[in-house]
Image (cartoon, rainbow, N blue to C red; front, side, top):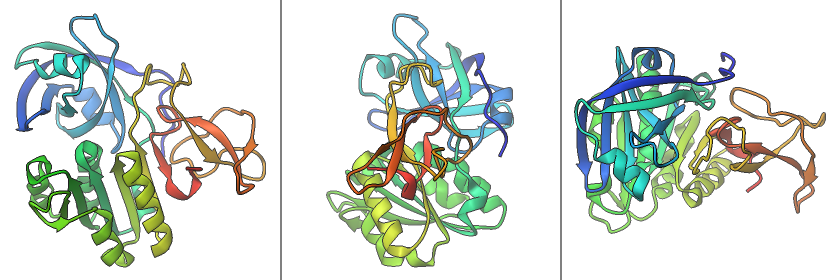
Length: 285
């Protein structure tokens, strides 16, 4: 895979479309041809609120084609509330693309995509790229209720099959999204997942049980998004030479190596820089 850019490009643009597929979830489309041409599935951008009164917000790139990029956000606080209020024609600045993204070649040709809630955001581009090369894709998508299963039919329209789950049983499997994954996941050659940490841990356990490798996109609040502040770290396995192993696109800088309770060596890596995508079996949960 190509090396990561040492510094992100700032794209000054305007909102070209806006939709709200579910209460509190907003998808903003912007014109950013350079970003659309260079973003890799699973990368993110730092979005600068127009007022300049708040720090930037990290959002996964949802769609990217021609000169249009879209971003999905859930309204949870003042930063996302300000962004969600933007309308067509409003100015916005994006810094990116950032992070490593998924290694789609390593997932094989029968891929399970697993999403929890708005963890769906970084999985549309992988679905499109995998399907375009002829791979089979099944989306395992879980949410609290049926109304929060955002754009499931959009994935289906591109050729992905669906396996849905809801906490309240209002649509699909009544229970965890990892239940159907465990039931029929042995046929898959690889797993790519994004969602809350408890779900990702469960996906990691399922992948281990099935003997299938999984790439996990970790959800985290980033202060800088470029690895400068070391405010977002995760314990990650190291090779015999002390280098962090299993990273999708890059190696972290050298740092002290410690041992987990089971004696396995690990080091801390930055989710925004060395991630946000990691091989599940290399994380020290």
